[in-house]
Image 1: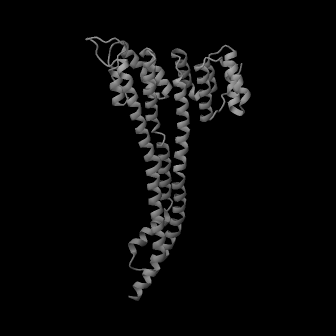
Image 2 (image 1 turned 180 degrees about the vertical axis):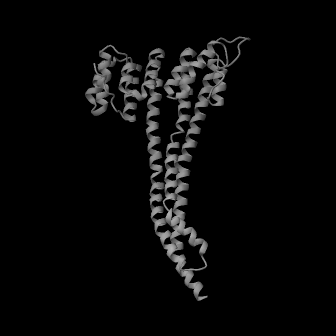
Length: 330
């Protein structure tokens, strides 16, 4: 049997589907009839996605396997959220994943729009530079007292394309860097997920891998087996860890048991829940601050610098003949 092709759902469509699945699980409604209702009431890719999940369930596959076949890119996150809902009866993981998908789409759109104006200013700057360099070269060559500027302008006339190319490369790099704040968002999702997992009395050796998979962070997912082994052995964590210091400290002192006695060392799960929530709030604030720099202050600075250079070059090109005539008169 040939492998079925995945359906290219957009992030808002995936979020809508996750919300629908969360509502079904929370209200204990049968999945197959509910998916059939979605299939009947929707159009396009969302209808095909509901049909795909319904077909998998009717074929005896689990909902996690169906979602994995439906969306391979989010297979780990979606499967973890569905398994968490099955084990804990809590659909918070599905809802958080839906929120993450909507935020990711919104942040990507914001970053794209933020760099449209610098790109437009860059095109304008190239046009002004092309005009003013040739103009300055003709003006300065007729003057004997500007040998240095003539040499500089001559060099610029031959390599005028270097500066716009550097500016364009800088904007591409900054647009790529706009994705980096997503790291803080994934850490926040990990902390939030781990907090409600502990609140649902999920064992720590299951809570850590599920939270890492749901967060969608490769580093977290790669390190969690080592953290589970360390907790099972009574250690404070793996010797080498790339986690942020505060999260590393909290996980290293987190106890697997809930008993409290005089010999208990570390942080009990109940006491760790508010700390994890506070850490999630802090990571989200870091995400907002970093993203504000990347999509507001840096594009604004690029526009101001390039626009200022364009205006200055144009004014000099206009005023230089007047200045030269005044110098000849005086």
